[in-house]
Image (cartoon, rainbow, N blue to C red; front, side, top):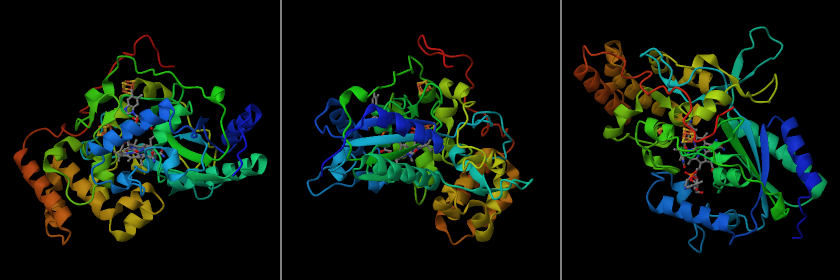
Length: 407
Ligand code: B12
Ligand code: SF4
Ligand code: SF4
């Protein structure tokens, strides 16, 4: 296939169109240099990560081609036709509370990316929000953009949000969206790390001089590493995903290892701690998404610090009503309840015993076992304060970034 080239006016057009479609940041990186230093470095890092068993049970990350190469080690392994990647990022930064703020000990925490909703009717005074999932609304916008790009410059393209055989964060860093923080998230000086990423693979070639990288602004700060309750951040930029609360509460099927349960605290879906403590997010959470009045990323306030017994009371119908179309839907009710049982055990609240006892009689053995663990924990802690769960992560004052002041 003959490939066109990203000219600077095309790049400019792309950035403008991505903003018009509701994205906050956009950038382009080359994917046509399998032997370039950046590709080789990322491939080595990814392989080392998988070989060290860091991916836990996430088998999709370990898939290989016939030659034994990991599909995600470089873009061209699975997409030999792709010469460039265009990355678009949407901010979900909001001024709402953080997981590390004080909260009732009876409440849980749902990761803020999963609070998203869109008005059923923007004109209605109640502005009731229906659940949305970033995979869907980013992909729709990316496909529109890819279609327009094709009309303008030709070439082949393919869009992914999350699910493609790519390491999106490495590509985003190479496209200048931001730098990879010590918590492994992509951070942008203006927007922080509350960014959702989407990728358009393209057969267009990118001249090397068009690549502009963002400087690393972590300095000597280690707040994310210090705050991680499960020690999943084993070193700067190194994550053992099999210990990460996001993995344990969202991805992990079956029972969660007993030794990690207490550290999960009150997180019932995902984890925001290593981003909540980041000084770049404490400022940039004011930088709202530019997605507009009918934005699909508005906050469903009921999901901030939700009461654990409210989540526990959900039957199949109520769960569907609240979470159909949300990222929480894919975790399913049984897994959410497993997580709620663990959070109840960590709460110190004796009033959850009745619910936990009811779950012990459930045919779902994973839930029954988690509930039984929680009962033992509550009974062992009887009389002690419930302050175990909320606001346990140290709250940091001021910035400790070498010579850099977050805006
Ligand atoms: C699997 C996965 C997870 C796993 C593993 C996370 C991980 N760190 O790998 C789990 C379930 C734990 C997870 C959690 C979360 N995830 Co996730 N996840 C993914 C997914 C599908 C693949 C990631 C992957 O390939 N990891 C493999 C490892 C090797 O990658 P890595 O740790 O990023 O390592 C690379 C770099 O760190 C770098 N590197 C390594 N060493 C060094 C050293 C230096 C000096 C430097 C500079 C770089 C560097 O090279 C490595 C390889 O290329 C991506 C989507 C995608 N297709 O890419 C989303 C994605 C990374 N997740 C995302 C989100 C939002 C989250 C959560 C915030 C959700 C939540 N609130 O619960 C948390 C964040 C936790 C955290 N601190 O990372 C976003 C990240 C956006 C951002 N701003 O970075 C993504 C891109 C999805 C999206 N489309 O927006 N996730
Ligand atoms: S998301 Fe939570 S558990 Fe995972 S690395 Fe960050 S602080 Fe640790
Ligand atoms: S908390 Fe500090 S070290 Fe961690 S990502 Fe943010 S600035 Fe970097």
